[in-house]
Length: 625
Ligand code: SF4
Image 1 (tube, rainbow, N blue to C red):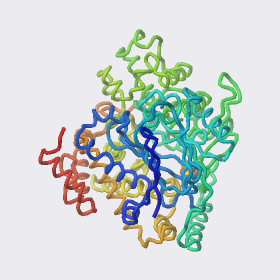
Image 2: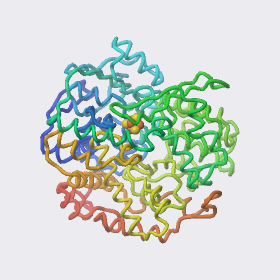
Image 3: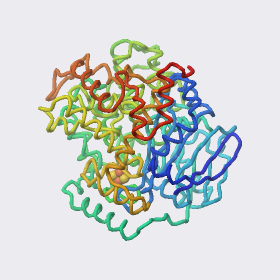
Image 4: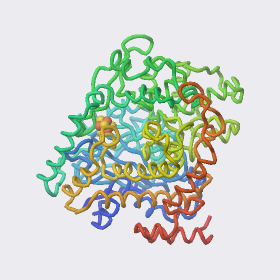
């Protein structure tokens, strides 16, 4: 039920293996397959080292990177072009994954592979070229230090085929910046958790793939029928047109109106000049085209061009909401052309825009507060100073001066300036994304219990809570977070984008029908959700074995300690006692103990008997550390 390509860069060994049917079905695909393979491959090391040791192991040949498609990737189904990258993060030292859309995973499946496992490290810079069954490890020295844009273009030229799909790293990945990303198609990024640094440590500049095979579908007629239902539903949705025109940029106004738009480093909830950086401004003054991932009619990618001013000529696919928020309001920037330029630089240098914007905002506040001095930076740092922000991005990617400190991520910055503890919004050392949690218990819990750190992709309950949750008790809020954390990871496992569901409300049951039609495995949505829940328990267990406990399951201190300023929630902050109550209930409903460790019976019930045994050993103090 699938084929895995195994590449060991230390020995140049390349081999294929078939995936056993029970494994394929149990873990579904994508991040489900990736998490299980990671656990199996790294089990001895996960038992032996704690997460802080693993931050360095993650950047050694001992780490492994798994690139995994899902059973729907590459098929005619709404937004079915996603590929997951799974590893231990060099930024957090715990379980991590990130994914990108575009065409890479589609091409990989057309080459006959469902996943790639990359081990070891090359002695000099290489790239892997997969052309159906022929796999070569090629010299990449000509691309050393080159940006992602040039690397992708030149690898296509070297192979002599424009249609080759390339995923690559930029200078940030080569320089082991702990939040380096992996980029494909000039701007579709596996952005979070430092997967680019993992590739950089393996001296793997890129993977290029070309495939000519058909992707098998068990019942083509049934599959087309269910897909058509999905496309038809989306086409008729009243927000479909807005999504095609603005994509995620339409969220700027919504979040600003709700009063939870991160502004001046998560201190204010509204940005007075949001009109200058919102979806409408983008559409009217910058947008020159659309882009979409494979098979996606929502087509949320915006191609933007800066037509005038000092950044004139910059073209980028983006920005989307997170980038606009992090390089806009959160840095006091009201110039959309600056955001476009920052987006371009991050894509080319291979840096996660969320972490970069978040850390530069924290540094700006630290400078304002006198924690970081001009002597530390070599320059002054003010809110909204675009040139300085762009300069810092280059310095991070090349690890120059202060850029070398920022390149270490939240953990490294806090090692140098412990006084910045309250200024850096992060969970488990992954920097927070673009939704302020001062007034949302749901969002605070979602960030705090997300298995990779402060990311919204596992649960985005803030909109529902703020729209209709005013009278909710803690129980309803906790249930909503767990519901999101159960449904949303399923999309990563299937290899589809979650946006048709979360933004336009596509029926969840269609995914189960599509899975059955594609694979021939009879299932139901309930069954798939059980598997998703199991994978959440597995990824939590990996991080628990590496040392994560209750103390790590808290939102950034700022939401409890400082009131939000401005807008409808001026003066609000989160009640710590209510949060403790929610966390207790969350653990209880999850079947984890009061310290956040999954109970053995919970793991056994969901089919993870061997993981239960490892947790039992940990509980009895027999795990080596
Ligand atoms: S909604 Fe956007 S990100 Fe998702 S698959 Fe479609 S184009 Fe890609």
